[in-house]
Image (cartoon, rainbow, N blue to C red; front, side, top):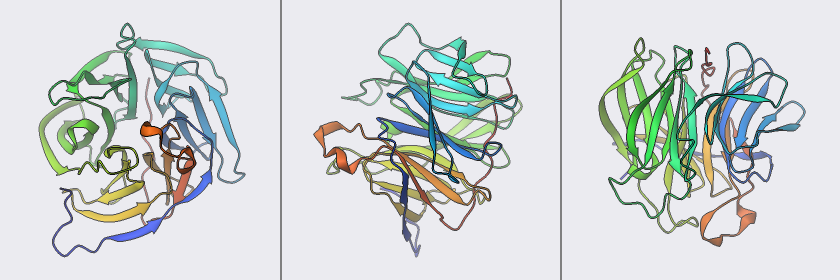
Length: 310
């Protein structure tokens, strides 16, 4: 069960829909401070979205491949986690060049969620296109680290669905979600080496099989400036805030079952943006899944995203 903490008062707020993009698999939001846009992806829609909160305009940049995640580059443009591996996209274009293939020969797999660490390395995992049915111990996914020089290292194996990850402000701890492990784990993190150790569970995630999706999982995540975790709960239509030790403190209600990820943005990094998807299992009513961006001001701020240094 999820940890609530003795005597904890759980607050609830509701997010508003700010852009209905009809995205099949909205994911991977990140705040682009230089452009003043909330950048995110539609995995199966094969595009990068750039949402301008001042005008409400959303621009779509096609990728031509399923895209699991993006990261900002220190030199401008993006690092992409595409179906076939890591690629670079220059600022102001839709052209990309493959930097390093990852499991490209296995057409049953694709890349998924990713993020840069404090030394400018980019981390992203792989998942099966069809992860169900899943048996414990049968995971085919992995987590990879891309160094700025283009070297790729497989860091974790045997994963069901490699998903959200983030680091504490001091870079001594990395949090990680394997959605089909139904836990949130953390590792000791060696910033200089980019290595993980001492894996341990901070909380169990309850799988609600009565949800419209037929299951609920922890999906994407971000840490706020206080070091607390914000986790998108796919299947439940909620984003949860946890303490670093796994106690539930706050819930954001989202009018979409397929909540997928979240990130802080805005000039003061006080807006929590939440992505959702319209493609849902079980033939559920598609009107409940706008496949777009939601926003809420939860009363705490986030941190600027780290950039890929390659």
